[in-house]
Amino acid sequence: MSKFVAQNPGFETRVRQSFNRQAFMTFLGAEIVRVGPGIVDVELLHRDELCQQHGFFHGGVVATIADNAGGYAGFSLLKAEDSILTVEFKINLISPANGEKLISRGRVIKSGRTFSVCEMNVFSCTGANEVICATALGTFLTMKNTKDDLISKRALETSDDS
Image (cartoon, rainbow, N blue to C red; front, side, top):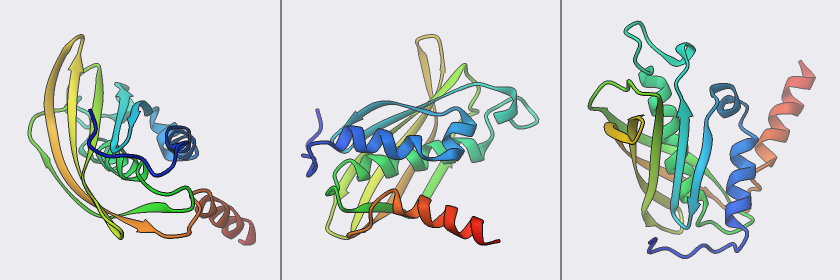
C-alpha cells in the first residue's frame, strides 16, 4: 500500500490521459497497467523492432519505460494545475532484457514542493517469471501552474508554423 495521498481525487484518470497523449509511448506500444498514489507500472510487449542486435530489448527502450513509470508515479501526487518534467535519472542495466514483455515499476521515494525522487525497476517477464533487468533513480521537477496538455498544444503550434 502506498504511503502517499494524491492531492487530486481524479489523479488516476489524469495520469492515464496524459500517458495516452504521448505519441512515443503509443508508437512503442507501452501501456499503463497500474496506477496508485505515488505508484505507476508500465508494460511493454516484446516486438523485434524494440530490440538490439542480440535480440534483447534495447537499453533505450528499457530506459524510456523506466523514465515514464517514475515520472508518472510523481505526477500522480501533483495538484490538478501542475505538471512534471524529468530533470535527471540514472539507470543501471543489470541483466539482459529478454522476455515476452517488460514491466517497469515506478515508486515515489520523496515528494517535495519542487522535486520528486522516484525509484524505477524494470523486469523482463516470461510467463509468471520476472527477472530484474534494470534499476533507476530519477528526479522530476514539479512545474507549478502548468497544465499537462499545454506542452502538446505548443508542440503542435510550432510544427504548424514551419
